[in-house]
Every structure is written in structure tokens, then in C-alpha cells.
Length: 137
Image 1 (cartoon, rainbow, N blue to C red):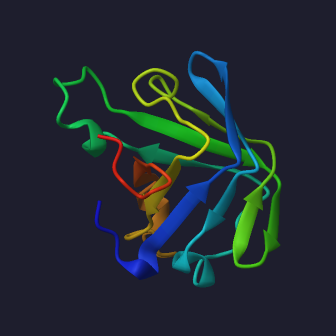
Image 2: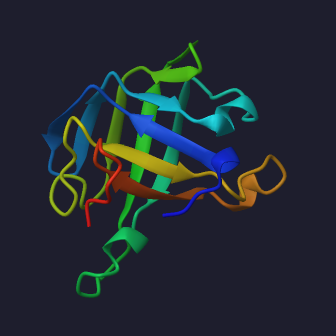
């Protein structure tokens, strides 16, 4: 996925623990990326809906979209990063189609989510990458 530098947001974590069939806890999760310098303050208790359907277009047609909701309770700004407290990701395919590993990370495209248009576009295009920045699929 090509994302202009100014719209680039990355989600990293230290470890991931499957909690339920459709939920994984992200320990030590944080956002980084150039978009943070222009972004509004991130709310302490919030969520993002990530659409990773495009990443799996090479597979047989899916009966639905591959979307996951990233939630957190608490944020801490430190050293050009936003650390997410109590972070988890939930979605039908989180622990099956796309089993997240400790060294993976998610690239989030924040284009078209400026303050004026954001209320109308609540889903963010996203893609899972390995630590080496290679696509998983």
C-alpha cells in the first residue's frame, strides 16, 4: 500500500496475545508516523476501524469485508509516539486469516481524514506488515 509520508500512521506493539476468537490484546502498543505532527489530540478512550480487505484481494472472494476495530483506554504522548494503554484489536478474522505476530505492524492511511472530512469517513485503509516492512500477502 502506497501512503504519502504526511498521511502515514504506523501501529506497533511489543507483543500480541489472542484473547478470544475475534480479539487480540496488543501489549506495549503505540502510534508513530509523520501524521501525528498534524493530527488532533488523540482521545483517551477511542477506537479506529481499520479496513484490510484490499490486502486479501488475491484470495478467493470473501463473503464480507476484512475490517477490525482497534480500541484503547488511555494514551501517553512521549518521544514522537503515542502509547496506547489497554489496546486491543477485534474483528472476525483477527486470529484466523491474519494472525498477528509480535514483530508485525500495521500501516494506516490517514489520507482523507482531515478535520473537515473525518466525520464522513470513519474507516481507515490499513495493511499488516512484517517488521522487515514486507507485505504478509
